[in-house]
Length: 332
Length: 235
Image (cartoon, rainbow over all chains, first blue to last red; front, top):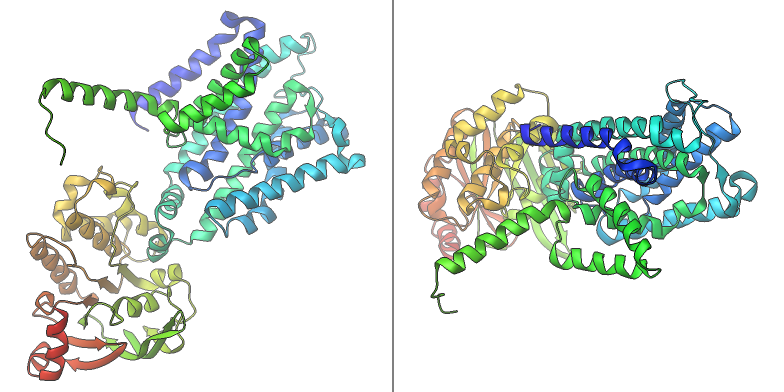
């Protein structure tokens, strides 16, 4: 890792770790979904940013993780959050094995549509199989223990803004480190090579379809772990988590942060959560404003927030060049 | 080493290769010469498993290649630098060259293979951190060949290695190919320009409308008026 990036990462973790007492309860609860979404989006961006495959069904894995949390804590009565996270990853993988085996054969719009279709199938399953999933009522996620500690003396909010917050920060930081290792590995290199040109990647011995499939599995596991982290604060696994608009929101967050940068999805999760909260406090038509923001990003800053500094630098340099050359060359 | 026998390939229903036969022995430099559209690229693509053969046989070190997917063929030890040799634009030069050391881990260690690739094209060392999109045509060609070389192949296929390059770069590429050949690797070059055929070539095959119309040494080619007429039209 380059020194600057490592320092920035450490500074961000330290700032987030120190934040709760300064922010107070409300704002700290607001930050909680950032960790779950951050992890889920790291997974999404392995496919999107590194693999060139835009999934419109990633929410199904988030939902799978949330339902795994509900089953483990509510049905099996196992309270350990470590067990919840492992079960979520397993559920994500189990779902991704058949779905990914089919989707990894396709790219571009076909991949997007296929993931969308599977996401909607999964949503219907959660919605209709009332006896198994609770239908539109969803399933309750009970409060877990963290590293075997129950924190009985804390009420729900104190638990969430205290131990749970730091625990999720640590999980997100560790998983970000793991993802960093993955994208820097030869596997990550092969994934980027096939995004650029699958045929040439094959000529160099890359097994393109398997590379995509493995990326799909990793992406799903991250999505599901993120989903389990999201489900504890809300206390509910809800079929709407798997709805296709939620998948769209995940893609939006990634675009907002910048899919071309490793940290883009993390920044995107933070920016989206804050932006949504702010817009919701302004107007009931907040979705309209979010749509405008999305349009603005795609048109004016396609690299997202992470790409903003480079964009501004380029603009400034261009302005300086214009100022230095008062007589522009005539257009040819 | 590589043996192509009576290879026939149809593209969109029309026959593009109509019985191509040629062989490349261990350590040999062989040139497939012909004008654009004669079937050179199709021949190389068929060897790499990218074009399905309608008939005939392709064997590499005694092993039948027909039906194998391209990545398996590459891992058997055939490096390929395609004509549109664009490197992976968003990977750096170093990443481009390092990639095949992972996909084909057998053979010499990765560091030695990478070092060797840069020894053949020393100029690339200046651009290690540069993205593929920021290179000139000649530099991209060098990356493409160096990348194929990092696979540590026994056979290297080069499709039009001099196409569209500035005359200043051509000798540098030619030197690199000479160095590759000097260490005993077999090389098959597809070329449309007789002037680019290296003097040290072991054999030249002239291909015309999907058929091999001449096979022999460069001197024999120059003495064959019929084959020279085809080749001259191409240049």
